[in-house]
Length: 188
Image 1: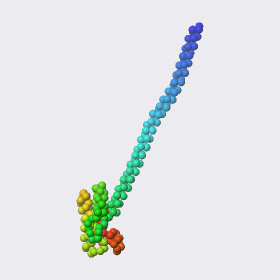
Image 2: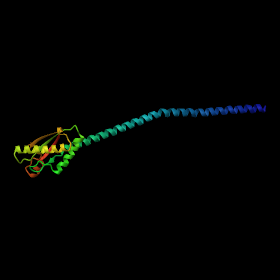
Image 3: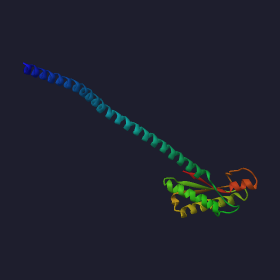
Image 4: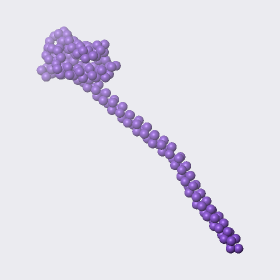
């Protein structure tokens, strides 16, 4: 009988252990599977969110870069238009300063191949109207010829002379006259 009892106790012990093992292993497995499923489901959502944030960040950076480039281009265009070259009294020869300015203008024109310009020749009020129109024409053409020598197509450059008709400074002294002896650049 002791053998039967021993055997029954051993079987009972095995059954209890098996039940405990099954019950304790099943619950964590369910939790683990549940946690794994949540992780698997959350992973694509997190990746999608990260990808969306990266795209938004790239779009914002691209927009900022485009805005910066546009501002830089507008500033360069403004500088091109607002920087005149000046001439000595009764002269149409380019000064060294005028040549440097024209080199910058040529660079801008190379970077903007669709742009075409008009060079306006201006004079001070001294001299006859006819003489000043001819002098303004020679000044505008001197600037055009220098730009052409730098590689800018002559077909992109027109010239016009206003002589003394459009003074930058209406004064009647040397300081005003020096400002009015110029070539002005207009982008078409």
